[in-house]
Length: 288
Image 1 (cartoon, rainbow, N blue to C red):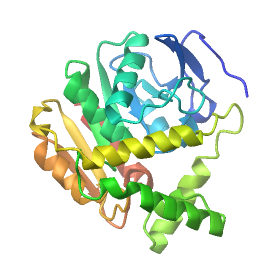
Image 2 (cartoon, helix red, strand yellow; image 1 turned 180 degrees about the vertical axis):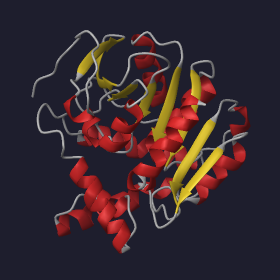
Image 3 (tube, rainbow, N blue to C red; image 1 turned 30 degrees about the vertical axis):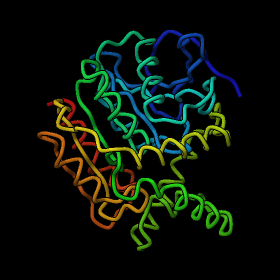
Image 4 (cartoon, rainbow, N blue to C red; image 1 turned 135 degrees about the vertical axis):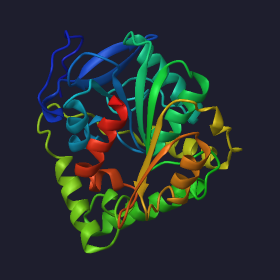
């Protein structure tokens, strides 16, 4: 595996060919990929449990990058980023903020999916001046319904995946309907589009730390989301098993002025399944 470290920024047509860069964050190397026009407020992507750079949906990244500067990264201890993964979402948020600052940004937009959505909320609540706009997908609030049960659900579907020779996301992210199964297969094929210079798999220790963080987040006291005073777009499928869809409605209700998008016959990966509809909505929201 090779990495193009510390090169000068240049556009890549597609996420599958974007070079992997690195930046020093307080003495620790973080890796990232960027694409799209290098102007305006960048969109920072925060990913899900067990995910590294190659788990970002290329259709989402490429779609956003048609008009926006998009940056995907591995947080501390994930993929090829060095260091030890924190076992709290607040620790992950601090590391994400340090990464953003290390790139020299004073203002960003955040797109947090699942665990990334937990982290995004922490960032907005603790660093309100840093974030201009917020997109939350397949996620929920601290103490939200069912979030503390993600670990057993994930382990059961990891075993199902092992027994059926399938990626666990086939079960975790999509519905069991024919439509959901087609969407699952298409999504998993997209994740294979990058053929060279792929990222390192997440380590067991990092995965364990993430699970611990999610459980603690699901058990902690609710936060005052009325303090989020920036434009927010909340999206999910109507049948999310990992972070129950009731949490999506709860976020939209508790964040002042939040816009809500719910996709029928869709699960945790609802925005992946409906990327053709979601990307125009997301771009319109970001550019409004």
